[in-house]
Amino acid sequence: MEQQIPYKIYLKETEMPTAWYNVRADMKNKPAPLLNPGTGKPMTAAELEGVFCEELVAQELNDTDRFIPIPEEIRSFYKMYRPSPLIRAYCLEEKLGTPAKIYYKFEGNNTSGSHKLNSAIAQAYYAKKQGLKGVTTETGAGQWGTALSMACSYFDLDCRVYMVKVSYEQKPFRREVMRTYGARVTPSPSDTTEIGRKILAEFPGTTGSLGCAISEAVEDAVTHEGYRYVLGSVLNQVLLHQSVIGLETKAALDQYGITPDIIIGCAGGGSNLGGLIAPFMGEKLRGEKEYRIIAVEPASCPSFTRGKFAYDFCDTGKVCPLAKMYTLGSGFIPAPNHAGGLRYHGMSSTLSQLYEDGYLEATTAVQTDVFQAAEQFARVEGILPAPESAHAIKVAIDEAMKCKETGEAKTIVFGLTGTGYFDMVAYERFHNGEMSDYIPTNEELEKSLAKLPQIN
Ligand SMILES: *Cc1c(COP(=O)(O)O)cnc(C)c1O
Image 1 (spheres, rainbow, N blue to C red):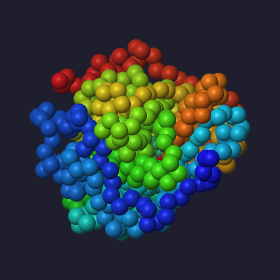
Image 2 (cartoon, rainbow, N blue to C red):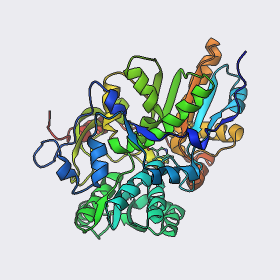
Image 3 (cartoon, protein in one colour):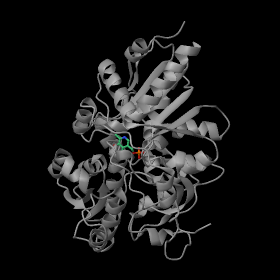
């Protein structure tokens, strides 16, 4: 008889992971190195340390150690809001009438409202340990900036956030949360940096993009003594920190002898997905288990499904190292989309390599379908999801409905990355029927991809 599975599986504090899992150690084809945009050669640790914190550079370049211990200070902070629950979506299953068993790992149970705090606290810790004064960063929708300001205030570090202008104006409450935690928030592009002034001169009236904000944040860091730049997604180190999500998920499932058939996550820069799937991908890479892993991206910003696997700039100002990734081109500015956290032009190099090698699938969802799924989920499971997370919900529901047709009782696990309380303007537009489903044309994408740097 099947052991009764509770609605929520919580690990005990003593069962929480003590080390992050580095999936790169198990990859035969490692993610391609970051390149120096000036020389075209792989970035050395010394070069990277001009921009990033030392310990984080070591993690970024570490392709060999399978486990990296989580420092005690970070584990203590994790204990304030972790373990996060793994929830069996009994109510949703019943509503859908599906034989599928659906689980979701909920990362929205902290003030920042998303998984981003898992990496923010680690990055702030290493900055403090290095004796820095502060860090700079960009934020799109505001989740990363919020998480980082919380982490910085905990370690008494200065935090300077460049927030994409359109979000700065549309999301005043996010901005105020950051200021509550002591961060300085600047709308980007701004006239406080050289690159910001250049972008403003070239594109007057622009509402900004993540790529612009990254350029400004990097410039701020490298021109101020005692500051380094930190990034909330895309980088290997961020996926490493986020592996805590997957490790907890796997430990919780193992306690009940559950093996997922399908694992689903939304993909912006790839950090929550990379973290959720990490230990499962490890088993897959070592040939121990087989899982279907699905990345879900917005149809308006389809890096995996319509982008190219190539070296590209990570930012609009082209000041950052080049990364080999699935990209739409660093000049690609996606149509306004209410899942701000999924609007980045590129994708994690680690996930890009895994996708290239056939270890994960990718699919897209249009906004109105995503919000419909979000609402359906909120009404039965109670949690009001972030629009980003709702991309995973949409595909989890689709897969569960396929099970209904075939009668298969598959086990589906998806990442519910955060809550959507700061996204009520988007929900309002959905309710009023004012939401559009813009999908970029091939011509638009070709135009942007034509400007990729020529590197083999
Ligand atoms: C930032 C964010 C994402 C997307 O970022 P990834 O790095 O792809 O995980 C997804 N969901 C929420 C709630 C976010 O804040």
